Length: 406
Image 1 (cartoon, helix red, strand yellow):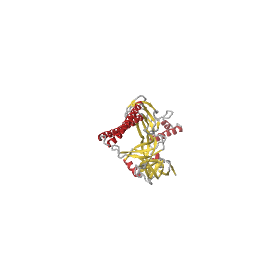
Image 2 (cartoon, helix red, strand yellow; image 1 turned 135 degrees about the horizontal axis):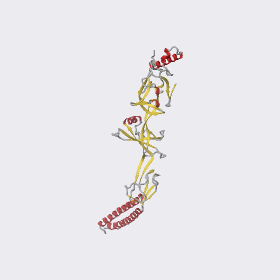
Image 3 (spheres, helix red, strand yellow; image 1 turned 135 degrees about the vertical axis):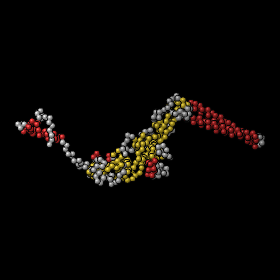
Image 4 (cartoon, one colour; image 1 turned 30 degrees about the vertical axis):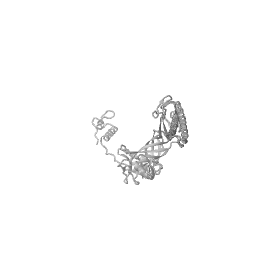
């Protein structure tokens, strides 16, 4: 029986023992004392613990989806121009005029810079005059040979004189050839005073304004990059290279002069791989420091939107093979890596470490760690704990990342 403390007071301040000892007290007072005693007994005496356990939590489990998938490996690539040209003058002179706007698109042969042409025109005139002088000398030498030939035949003139005339003729012929070459050089220098685009592309800003003196082969005037097509360069590991080389028909570099493997490209703000190209170069050796090998793909760029220097995501065909797939939401992560939760035949939750592949149609490819007979928890993950028992409802994994119970 519960004990009531001797100093306990009723709500009206009187001792409850008086109500018990005094027979004249009302029955209601006695009942109140009994109720207070029972309440104190309930709070003071420990009750038996409630029974642990209950119904097992319900989760949705399904076998991994098995299907043939095309495997792609993604890399970070950098866009580079397919050609880069530094525009430098081939003759020295003063810049007279700039004919392009900074950053403009140019065609092959478009005029970019004009140097002061007056010295070059003077050189051309001088070369032409020298050519005329050489022609006159040649004409005289030919006449001398023609005049002395019959005299020598009649032994009127000595043979030595004829030899001298023939030597003068050959010298005049050589002088004429030298004068013609000097004229061509002068005309070429005059042509080089007009600096033109060697190929189509986009020019950078000008590095020399009108009035500047430039030196042949030294002064950088501007740069030009070819934008259609562009290169996408990336680095692949040795394991990836071996997988690509075995999956690709004829190897990564292609065979018989044909293009290499197909690649797809997307920019950082794009969700789809909208650009397609072909692998056209793989380096000859692995980098000894990083253990990677450099690859390069050529990507058509007719709208010139792909800009050199930018980054992109590049995916490379890695073959087709059967694969197990689960919803990406069913993948968990811990300190040791990625895992999925499965339901054992006895209803126990068992974690499975997995090695993951790419996303395909919203589902994650599982390379290793699962078998087709495993039951993967795809719904109610928050109620599943490794080692505990659960009630597994049959679900399905369809062509979308959502799972539903059957």
